[in-house]
Length: 143
Image 1: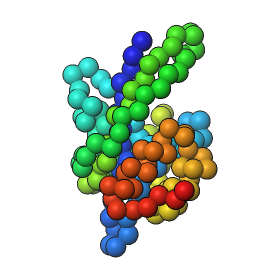
Image 2: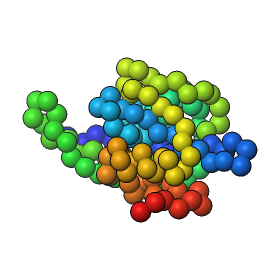
Image 3: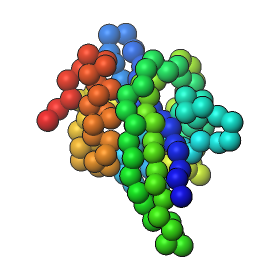
C-alpha cells in the first residue's frame, strides 16, 4: 500500500527576524505540518491545506524542498510505503491555532532554536528537510 502526504517548512519574517514554524505531534515529537493527500488534490494543494488545518496559517509555496520516503506498519500489520513532499512555505495570514485532534501544539521559533528543537526532539528524517529549508532561506543549520 502506498500513501502520499505533503507539508512544509513554514516561515515568516517579523521586522528583521526570521521565524520557523514547528509543531508538536500527538506523540510529543517536534515535526512539520503535513498530511495525507485527498482525491483530486495536487501535492501543493495538500501541503497548503494541511498547514492551514493543523496550524491556522494560510501560506504560499515558495519552492519544493525535498521528497522523503519511508515505510511504517499499520496496527493490522500492513506495511505502508509513505512518500512525503515538503515545500518551503511563506506564512501569508492567520494566527497560530493547533488542530488539537491532530497535534499537541504549534509555535514560531528563531532559526537556531528551531534547529535545536528538531535535533533534540524531532524525527531524524526531517533533519535534512529543515537543513535544506534553512539553506534556501540563507540560514545556516547547526551541526
